[in-house]
Amino acid sequence: MSGSEPAADEMYCNTCGEVIKKAAAVCPECGVSQSGGSPSGGSGSDIPQSREYELQEVARQSTGTIALAGFIFPPAAYFMANRMGLAAICLFSANFLFLGHLITPFHARGMVKSARQQLESAGSNW
Image (cartoon, rainbow, N blue to C red; front, side, top):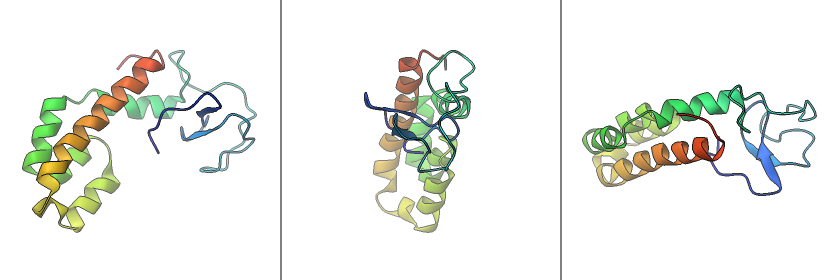
């Protein structure tokens, strides 16, 4: 998932939560038809329920804790932010031995803040 904010002519996919054009009949990411009506978000938000749950899991993390984890062992911060792909890349590329200790704390903290902003703009609680 891209995690970006939709523009005026964009929306979230009803199924995967990816940002797509409002005029799209089918999501280019997951291939599901978008003609089914409104998103399935249960709390009255304009984002799909699966995306909302994912954002809530990340938003509940403490920014200080995730930054500290990113400084001590960078793959752990990505794991805490539910970014298993980034955690694996960081671990297997040995990025954490080089600049990972400097970059990851800020990146992981930014992911938490971004998730909180997306939930707040959608009118959902975190």
